[in-house]
Image (cartoon, rainbow, N blue to C red; front, top):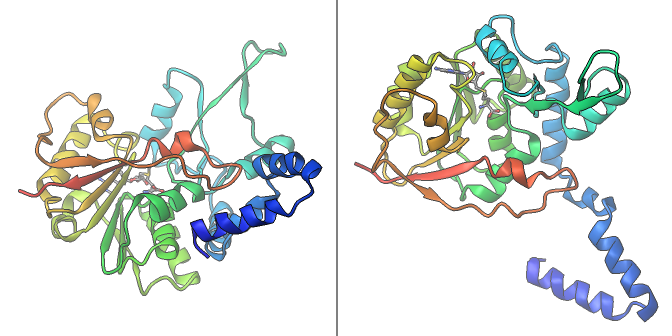
Length: 303
Ligand SMILES: C[S@@+](CC[C@H](N)C(=O)[O-])C[C@H]1O[C@@H](n2cnc3c(N)ncnc32)[C@H](O)[C@@H]1O
């Protein structure tokens, strides 16, 4: 049944409900989260299972001791910030951990007082809902396409693309050997190796892969992990090599914001045009449309 057929069915059903019960029923439909069960699909269950597996392999902050730059950057944010990986910890898991006293959403304003303020959370991965938004609502049909995730970390984009799209190949490039090992473990365990490949490399060595990609995903890839001069180099490499006309680029945050703090030039004029996205889609009670708004889609103009 498609959307308009379902709408007609619901209208027919509502016309049969006792008049005095209608306001209560409509209020329930608007506000309940009991209907959210209908939004849970097999794909989401598999992603949750991968997330649970990976959680057991990593410390709660899900960063490696080798990632000193990322840790330092988080510590120097204007507002107290902690890293909570959104693929590993969804809202419900964070709530449970807070109730158990293992995690906190707040920090103490003056030690010993009851005054607290909310911590800022940053994530180095997409959440399952963001993956669903990306592959089911933002991107077109990817049948036959090559998707490359620049800095694939835990592999969230690769698993999301495998389960929520028909992409022919999903390739992750990750500079950290430890994260490559974790991704390969998940790819093997869940039987994804027919369409997913993980390459342990600096993206700047992958010119022919980038030239052949139909979709390139860049989720906050360089800012926390590379010094500004290397970020500049990596962006120039991407702009130089990702040139296939009509290919799609996904960035978080926007290209302008990603480049705004870098001193030096990246010539991206005439490179891409932004494709407007509809962020209003409802994906469940934890659906955070503000998070989707950080996701930007661009189309390569071709040189
Ligand atoms: C914010 S995470 C992105 C995670 C993943 N793409 C997602 O959306 O869930 C960025 C990752 O990029 C990796 N990275 C940073 N610079 C890189 C480079 N030059 N080449 C390959 N990977 C890089 C980091 O090690 C980190 O794991």
